[in-house]
Image (cartoon, rainbow, N blue to C red; front, top):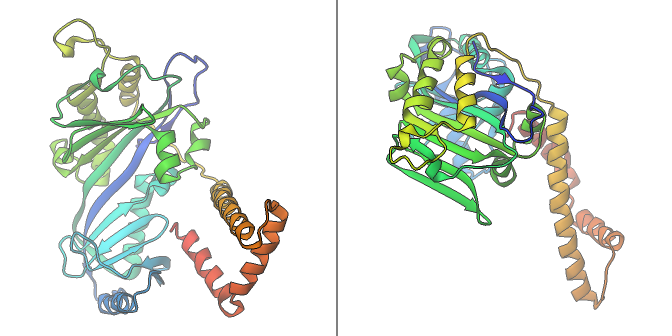
Length: 369
């Protein structure tokens, strides 16, 4: 069953409260080749990609393939795939003569909303629709396991972790630790302030209604690659749901743990932190869990509008400052500034391309770009 689980924050303000668990990133290699009825024209796609590149167009080309809209990029991937396309659910790197021929990254919001199994089934339906066939089973390359907690206060630091990782680091903002990171390569653990990460990097505000809180959320996240996955027999999607608990028990017991430091020189004997005790219990409950999450697209659009509004307000202040310098004014009100902005926008407005450009942005947002 799916890893995705959820629990409402508990009323005890002194203890960590479990919120949500799931897969935040998943990458899978697909060994596909053309059938006699394949409608996916690799040569035409390469020509279109080259046209975009030579025209130095920053915007991707929107194509409908197999009944699904895709954004074709004007570049290949850094890992050697000549073609890259994506939509709200998948980023697909592919090439007719690559092996594996398709490398698919399941996008975060789609994973939280629908789950890995549903997305895998949707991709395979698309594979059938364009006339591709599997030469051998798909192979998982990377899985990010995440557990989100509400922490009323953080009472641990870098020295509270006991890990097999040979590399560790921490990241600070305004003197406060925001991220503790351990390892590289096959296994990486990050324990970090998810609220700060959303504000500074990802803009994934759709997590707020899933959590039921908008502050104090910390994430425990393991990034696990193929070598460790294979160690636990996790190669296919079915393997993932059958054996992920075994992998997570190893990660949370043997590879990494959060403890309460004592005077004992052997840190492996330090008592487990309550956060890690609860994490163990969540891992043991994985079997039988499977939840479909509603992500409100209206809320996502409202948040995007608010962020644009904040940016516009900053630009309005800059316009007011420029007008004060130009006209020798000591003060310019917001209403007067908006009148000047209105005149400025009408000077640069191109009625011939307005609707076309708006339609293009509508399509990009619908594809999650």
